[in-house]
Length: 460
Image (cartoon, rainbow, N blue to C red; front, side, top):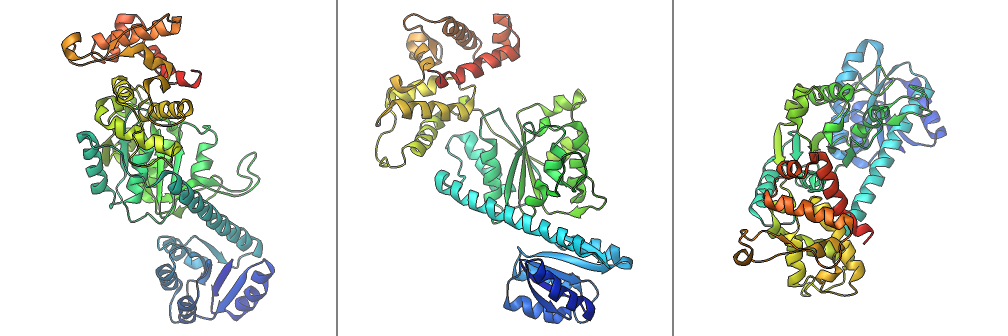
């Protein structure tokens, strides 16, 4: 790395001018704060090492100038033992960490390796983000339905703030897309957006993933590791499925939200981070609180601002635009004027209940693009389960325009089962608890059957 070292002790100046190059770094040595600021005006540095007490300008003032010139420059504070409190205060001004003098070179080397690792992770993140943006385009929400327009208005209101946001909605509705839109419309857009699924991480590793760990802090911790809070420093951390977070971690997350401080596993010292937290869940958090599975104080803390994302079945008018948007990922060269879906295919899509929401629609579109060599996509290109339903007009069916389920040809046992489910849902106007009661199955079983149906295109 390119490092600037500022300290008024001549012995340390000489030591660093020899040892830092030996460790593989390029170093500029400055005897005081004014000289350091002058160097920062001329050049950009990956990291600065500054003494707190220097003539002219102190270490905190130098850090402030460094962040002004180059926000990505990391800072390490050197301080005497009597000034530890001041060093901790420097963390609040953006310092990466601090060392007390006299310090061992091995300690400095380990700290510099952590800085280099963080910078490398940030570079990789930005490279991946750039590739994703080229593939997927911007994180614009698709849909002009009233409910999605309301979601867009809420995003534009809260995005410029630092408030914690809770995104609620069923699985597959696009909660991460809303989180990305919040990040992209905030002042943190140039900083990392880090997403983590709390339900996908093993309970014994989630603390290390979020907060990092020191080498040797537990069995298997062969190296010091930076946590996702540090990776997201300055940006946004998206905690998906926050309802799955173990209760032992909920208290630690609450402390981070209240103080802005994190502590790595096995470390005695805490560090300050500037991270905007966005959470999401499909679960009833209030019910979890009542059952003792979620901390009430954490629920209030993450729910500073709430955005509810409607299920796809409640905004069917958005389906044509959504389907075409998803389709063009697989057919990027199809002219914009080309009709992608036939009117019959659109009617089939709009008549579906979409238990898997937008994620299910994406699978259906992918299935259709595999079967269809060129647009327009017809009903025959859709997964087989769409052949179990047809929509009749309200005048003929006298059901207010809702789908009527009709068998087409011989049906398998699974198809007969799904037809019974769809008919029960139709009779109860989509009320799943009532449909499950009529069918004599649990609500969980009903949801499992619907989710299985949503993935039938995999084997169709």
